[in-house]
Length: 246
Image 1 (tube, helix red, strand yellow):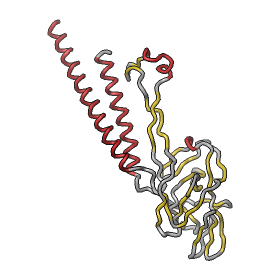
Image 2 (tube, rainbow, N blue to C red; image 1 turned 60 degrees about the vertical axis):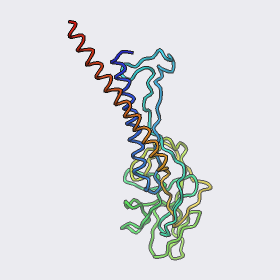
Image 3 (spheres, rainbow, N blue to C red; image 1 turned 30 degrees about the vertical axis):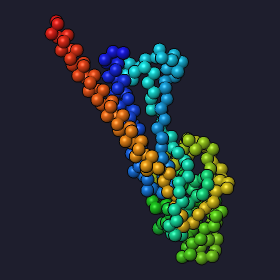
Image 4 (cartoon, helix red, strand yellow; image 1 turned 180 degrees about the vertical axis):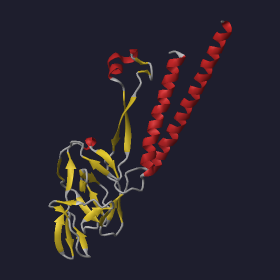
């Protein structure tokens, strides 16, 4: 491998580590966000490299260079935390709350709800939480929700939360504020999931694990930087010596 190819390979390695750090930093920043689902960066080897083995060389990234393919979301459940707030709700099991937004129906595991200016159950941004029959009106003081999602106000049932599962969770797209868009994935009514009133689902980010990974990747990134500096100095020296021989 020439100095130029080595330089590009080291630069690609540093860039991949920077991508990993960006994903981990975002996970760590949302460690206290209810219902947040961490992302994991996935790399792939180009098809040409898989077919040709070690004979494949990418001039920009070195032999058989793996490339960042996508950030996949880990939908594993976080710890359920008791808040004693009757409008806080958590899903114990697989499923999503359905939220009506200006862009259509979105999904979330974040059950920190409130009552918006129209008097309906809503997210903290004011978007209505959907029930099986549409929006759920909250006109009263005493709100109770059973494990099946039936909502009662002052003893009168006013609706039932719509909780669904999607056929292809990996196709869901993050839209910000812990919301997901369908990405073309079909939905169906969730089975076996229980609603826990007065609880919130914590982020599924493991802070100790993430910080350990960030330290390791930071060290690797620094190593690539030192390699790049070494190759840069070697290139300058080579050019200088060629100049003197000429």
